[in-house]
Image 1 (cartoon, one colour):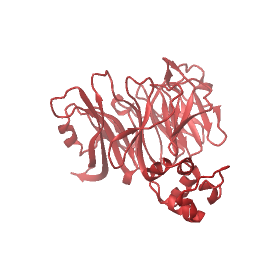
Image 2 (cartoon, rainbow, N blue to C red):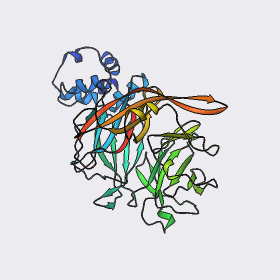
Image 3 (tube, rainbow, N blue to C red):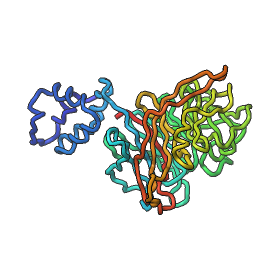
Image 4 (tube, rainbow, N blue to C red):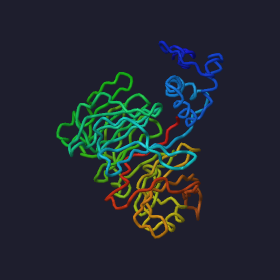
Length: 381
């Protein structure tokens, strides 16, 4: 890692700008900057070019992480018509509204079929449909400096694939290549250190075109997945085997937004429900405690289910119309909730406790589909 003076930007060539902060010793400057919140750093970056370089420094982020000064922010990737491409937004932690990020979008972005992989400081967007055709393009959204850059593309164009990060070192991508006849090209792996894609020879009795959902198990050595037909699979990274499970196929309603909160697996169901189960040990059951939201919002149906890093909570998004005469407005609502086990009549239940809910975005509902929410993730920045 660079020296502390470099983090302060003191090694910028021909830098003549001097602001009050730079008159104090370097170590004091770094310690002060480390304690700032993300919002304070954003405000600081507007002061000058020098401050902007410091506020967006990855080295500063590492120091803030070591000091426990990072904070959770919810990022949303959404296609909002009539915009030609999806955009990144962030949920403002104080105003509780989604704010569009001012970024350079001079690249073609898929509007469907992409898979997403979260890392410590950003998100990979892998494959998808561009002009109705699968692409091999891969981009990385850096949450430290809010930039998007292209990385090496996959060897195969894919849409509707599944991707999982294993041991924070490699990204495994399965299916989505629209031609599963050649099993040697059905899966590939990306090494984060070398930036190289390699085909992954896997053994599987079936080559599903699309993996509906997948999740890395708690041992970080296996991927638990379900395809578009509801067939459940388990992939071993050590044995490089992708095998179908003998248990009954999963219902199609149970194949959306899987989350693993050890030891239970959660997913988004239909009719505004969140479901849970113990993998290989129990059937799907409904999470209790969302009844109030279901009653308050007519036609309540969750469109995205994800983790919130804020105190280990979960989060949901849904569409709703505001109360009143204006029926041309459609709102995107957001809620955070904690979960807890509870025994009712010798039956184990999981109960949600709503911590906060409210509208975070509004749109003219004359659009056919104003909120095409493709992905949502909470990261520490």
